[in-house]
Image: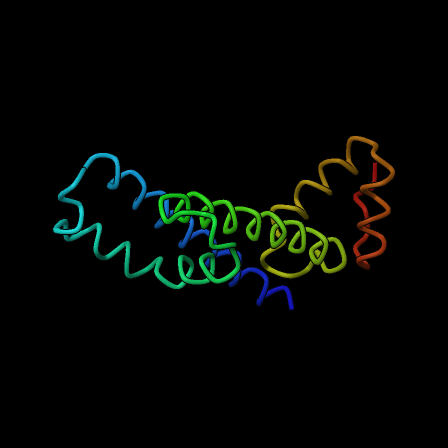
Length: 130
């Protein structure tokens, strides 16, 4: 499950950066943006998100707002995937994705944080001895 969350979070990051790049090119390329090679590549990469956003939004929202709204939806999805990743890591600190969190909890436990030591115990990891 954790691997799936990490993959989805990575896809959200890629799409979010593509939307951000498309927005920057929208501003800088002006009216000739449709002839810009990189803008067309980013537009192709973000088209599914644009279509999904158009599908779930009311028709009152005009097309000029679909881009920022798509970025907002991707950012919200990324946030919830991040929260899910941390929750999964707290139950399985031995997973390779959770290495940074494990190091942080060991450091906190060494400083005397009892909650961090308890998380390590729940994951069948001996807290460092003082």
